[in-house]
Image 1 (cartoon, rainbow, N blue to C red):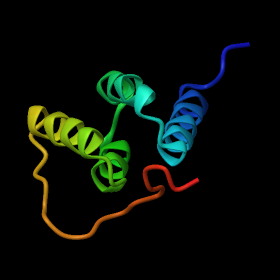
Image 2 (image 1 turned 180 degrees about the vertical axis):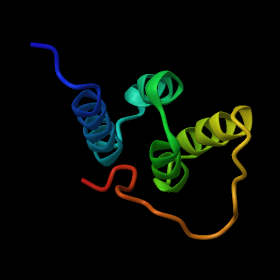
Image 3 (image 1 turned 90 degrees about the horizontal axis):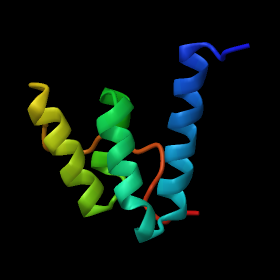
Image 4 (image 1 turned 45 degrees about the vertical axis):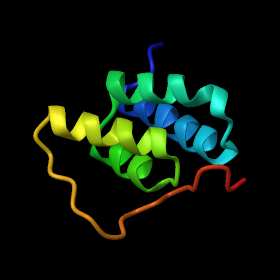
Length: 84
């Protein structure tokens, strides 16, 4: 039985938050790949506000390519880089 697309996405999103929380530099490439492959505005906001410059830059690039404006200020941060 194939998982529902929504369930699959939620699993991916939860895994990405876990990797952000762990904060290991060697996973950044895979996190950026995941953003560019299956990312959405929720992931972009998490990346922008997690405290990692590389992930923030990747999120800005993702948003720019899709025409989403980036507003300065505080935003949602479901998890901080290396906070676990």
